[in-house]
Image (cartoon, rainbow, N blue to C red):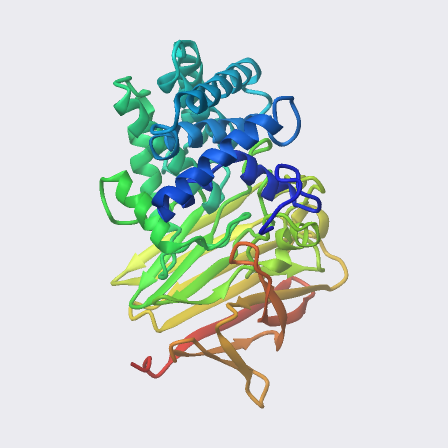
Length: 482
């Protein structure tokens, strides 16, 4: 929407777009543009919002949006309001006071996970910046102190197990630390340790291009923006390789990086953004992404259910069903009760032995996945084994490897090998045994708002009797061209 009309409730606008509009996070972009024109535009838009949104309505007065707007108005105050005339400042601060009082009255408002922290952030900003805001600040800090132990797991991962939500929470905590320091207010005891431990997990979830892995409603995001967040964290610069409580693993050797989702879905109440992608993985070669999950479109309904399915991930699917039951409005119904992961390392060689029972209840089958990465990084091997626990008719399976759109793929004439060519000339060869190999169309939703055509490698077969085993290898062909 280049010229939305009406401005604050444009016809045809998607819900997430409207929430972002009313949350004013784009004030940072105006500040980055710089100059008087950007400053005047920011002032005019703030005054326009106040004039057009005096009464409660969605999404303008939803708690998360109010928290975002308060944090952005007050956080960017020096940019657009400090040099404004007295009347504008009074109007803006009067509106901010009214919004803070509303937020104080309604929180926690049934929110969970990252949304609670985002809303509390706005209340804390108001309590630090507005006259007579001590009660707001104390209420926000109480919420933060309650939520940090609930939401930040022992290894530093966020309970929602979404790289995008993890990044959002970490940004909020860094901003809160800076604001509390400037206001000379003591921060909650868990805040500093949460930031440090979350930074290490965020590095685990970064690909070679600096962007995020595509698990659980996540997009790539911009690598340089993530690096800026990490710089603000301070502390150690090395990523974790294993985050067992968060359920993520990182295998790295040579130029090759494998990021694996090896954990169960989040508990009920924290699973609104969960996908049925248990034991899926992504591979990058240097800065080039090779094997990916399909990603997530932020708002288009026709993609939101499809992107959450097991088939949209680089893992195994049975009988065209999902390893977790997907609720229409978000969240997980049927889910794996037991997801295991054992990691071994020896002389630079890495193994993961994993399993999940997401198909046990409905199909009577356990999925075992083993990954091996050679110390050179030039040889990645996998084994997907199906263990039949309940006898019955044969069960069809597909092992999928979704390819990044910049990867060129060609099927060998013999039909047992796929050749991959990365954007910078790196070559890889995928071979398999125990399944029929094919190249099929796929979709990539890894960049915000984009839908790109791509391909997927599919290994298909039938599990009969006691089960089935599919072995595959991804090996580098020669050296990357300079």
